[in-house]
Length: 249
Image: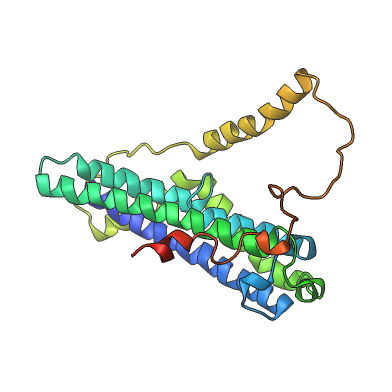
């Protein structure tokens, strides 16, 4: 059973990485073609200039960070389930290595979230650090966006219909290791997770309505930066999360 799940998890993860990493590389090409620079510290605020690229990049970033309900989360869930089952074995060595693998994968996931939140924030959010570069940027053509939209839809579709994908992969794996048990594995229902997430997103607005929130027009003022005059260089940059690492001996 563990061998079956292990092979399924590996194939599933390879499939998902082929989808969202290809998507991220092509999106990086879009950004480079629009700005003609690879320096993240010169960018910022590209969402206003390239909204569709920004949205697709956001989907790809969520996928590689393994957040539900996208495909990266789906395959990592199968990997976690496999390692948990392996950690329940009676052999002490197996328990040790499977536990160590779970910890390593968890740390990797946390680092991915840190890296891609920095990447998306530095490139697409905030204001432009180099105004000239960002002002000249514009959205790429529909022909260039079409394959990116297709890959983004795969990130969503593979995640939501993960049980069907796992069923297809299990048939392939059983041809490679036919003597493996095909006991039902009972994965989570991704559509149910989507419904719960939508409910959690809607609830705050329901509470705002019921509690008669202040619906007056928002007052606009200069950004507050803890008593300092706001400067565009205060924004998140490519080195924002590396200061403590650089200071360490």
